Length: 104
Length: 355
Image 1 (cartoon, each protein chain N blue to C red):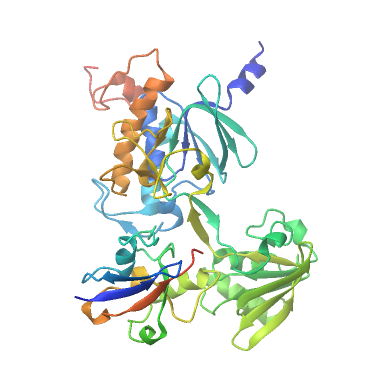
Image 2: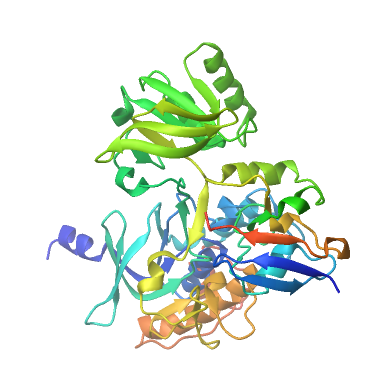
């Protein structure tokens, strides 16, 4: 089994079981951690904004242009900000650590 | 009573007020219209379509029954065409800020521009809530909002002679930065990167104004605002080169829209998870009689946030609302294929001669 390590907006840590082929947004949404995924994963609402742990940033597939443009629209982002609807879960991501960003 | 007085006293009275002009709200106009009920639709966006029009107008949707593929905008356009015969009233670009039940049992809604509308029943079809501009993450922002920091341009003239800073990389930011060159004393456009989510022609125009020295473009993030009593004098920006102070007396921030539940959360309705309105599955009525919640905004066991669920909920809520709005009348259940009454409301001449 592979797990995702999540820090929520209150700073509490959670271990969430991954599911192959799921978007990370969907894993977070269904765990009740306050990630809404309003647009359903269309890279349009940015409600699934997360900050990936620096050591993981390079290991993830790079963000595509539409994700970068959407991140640029937000008032505040970090070096390793991502939209979690654009990250597909696989066993290879076991141990991925991220923090759910404040609602913009 | 003279005609003018009669007109003004009935002008804002409707059978049903629908909050939200997304697909569910629009289809509710149709279902109400078939029953002969008049609707008014209020939406905070300046165009109908809700998320379909604002978030993903160009993206294909594949799970609308009978439409193997349709974009958010096409779906909106088709719904507007379908509801056209019913002549619903629209109040766009407005939020419902006040909600009260009158002694006669009807509802009075106050809109953000001050207008009051009255209805016998209310359909809340507000999706994930109301769209609102995202705000800069800087300290002390509130003091400047509405005085020297704005999220839309309502009064161009008020920007004359100002040192204007426009922030953002989308069409709104670029269009206004370009438009206000010549009006403002100086125009600076700031964006986090040199990637723009805007029409290429706008980017080219901005670059040419920059080359002419009539507009300055800087890459960076807002870090702090400086000023007194809400009067902005300068901003601190954070860029690759570190921190820099920039003279600015007006700031226009375009960070797109976020969605929040908004005033609906204060109407005493039973909320599930603080975000969705609990309804029954017979009428999709809330815990307040006469107030229904349909589409993504509602919650009931088994709820699926799908557009098609919203359509179904709109039909059942409309029938339930009819009984509230027209208590003295019998609801006759009819089909559009065969009912001449429905066909006349739809302004079509039916194929059926029998009716």
